[in-house]
Length: 317
Image (cartoon, rainbow, N blue to C red; front, side):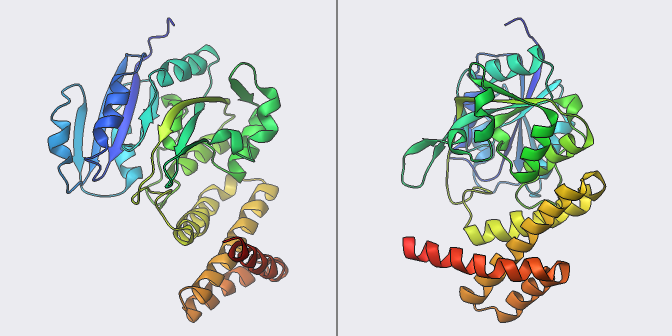
């Protein structure tokens, strides 16, 4: 591959002393070597700084704890490359990750690409993540080799409904980034950033079903390490409310309606959780009241479906 664009690798970390070395080593071991590796220490209180002294090849920045979005933005501020890749400090890229992603990105002048991965589970086994993604399956018929290219309308529809590309899976053109990662977002700052790009311009993207990295799981993962009730509260209520307010002027009526209905359904489910699991009656009623204030018929229709789903899950377990 002739492409020699500088790739800036941003590795945000917080108290990952036991795993950060594996992430850094996987970045150093890339077959694509024209890289700038930046590690942003988001206020770690363990021995992260001592571990990082073993890597003179990296640029190290320390900041007070402010969350993964603020750490990534500091990395972006110091990025010299025209291509950006953000590697979570508990994940591992396989050696050809950058070579294959950069070649696709540059040869077709795309805005960003993302790669499939091996997903670890708490039981200790791995599974092929994207091949099981229901939002991506309709596009598999377009696969040429390992890659699937999406038209803009497909990209827009996909990212309104879901985010199939966690931070470690993405390689993107720096010039396509609109305003970086939203520091007010609690979990899905990567999802919010992709939406910012996609809704602001006609983005061209592609994904590969070839597994090019490994996603590891532990109890302090921003998403995977949380209970479902926390994901619901932060990603599908707080974050979604922020995205609807921020992108309201860029969304079509149909897109906004879809997000509003997802938001109301999440409010109803969280209301049920607070009532049944936490015994927080007032909190439960307030959440339900917010959904009712938005759309009474939709909320009333959603309540029995949420209860039925809860009952089915209980029977399965």
